[in-house]
Image (cartoon, rainbow, N blue to C red; front, side, top):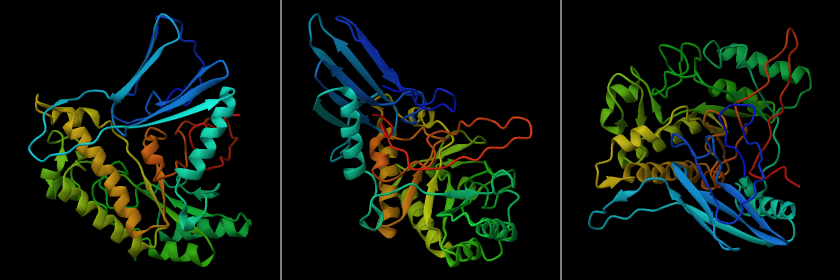
Amino acid sequence: HHTGDLCTADSYEPHADPLPARREKKFANTGGRPTQTAYPYYNLGWPGEGVIVVLSWAGQWATQFNRDDSTGLRVRGGQELTHFRLHRGEEVRGPMVVLQFYRGDWLRAQNLWRRWMLAHNLPRPYGKPVHAQLAACSSHQFGEMINANTANQIQFIDGYREKKLNLDYWWMDAGWYWNKSGWPNTGTWEVDTQRFPGGLRPICDHAHAGGEKTIVWFEPERVTPGTFLYTNNPAWLLGRDGEQKLLNLGNDEARQWLADHVNKTLTEQGIDLYRQDFNMDPLPYWRRNDTPDRQGITEIRHITGYLAYWDALLKEHPNMLIDSCASGGRRNDLETLRRAVPLLRSDYIIEPVGNQCHTYALSLWVPFYGAG
């Protein structure tokens, strides 16, 4: 099993633990982001065979492994807290589970999983397997995109061309939208035309003319005071007034508006890769919204809506890649990875020492990708 991500040096660290008779092991993520601190991909091995067990739930989950007096093992997993009744005609869904039995050693099993993951799960734009990408951005020069503008973005693209560094993508991260206090002031998803006259389209067109595509960052679920969504659509939000809130993707009207608005933005601006971040823990918002006889329902509705939202983007842009990000690698459950690729497995990096600087390669990463 592996540690999840918490932007620390041990993010995604592998572990191999024995499970003696009459013992148990429990795992759970924290805060509602599915691969934060814990990671629901497991390889249970015994002499000559075993089974890979994966629990996929884009919210708060828990797993438990109980060994009996002999060789029996019971595995339980699911949404961590549920206690609810359904209304007449109402339906809900639960987590997805994958079991992959194998013969041979556990490293062979990791590679079997990797082959299955690549062949049958990851997106296939234009019907082709995804591959490593070379991307660059100017985030360190311009405070993400807060101090960026049309001219300096084009200048950087041209600089890479002059050095003959052939980029697949030019990456525009947080802060390209109207905001009052910096890039975390999210909730107004309109291009700041004071810094970017004509929107992001001139930058995207310039990139396309030289053979590069573009990545643009969004964080639609976190809504902060003073933004469009906070002011105009309070019924769509979960949270306390005056504090940041969560856009409730379990609200059909909110989800439809978001899908329509983002699809329009992607098309009008000429964006090629949609990068979605999630820099807040949703679990307190979900649970505070539940009544005692409906515990877990808000979480279920949000997760169902989150997946439906991405499906709506892919319906309009079937060959577009989505980058899954949540303060790094905290949202890499299997159903998310059936729709997206994480370009960064964690936000943790080694800081430069003295006047030295470092270059980091960004590439496709999937669970168990490097094993064996």
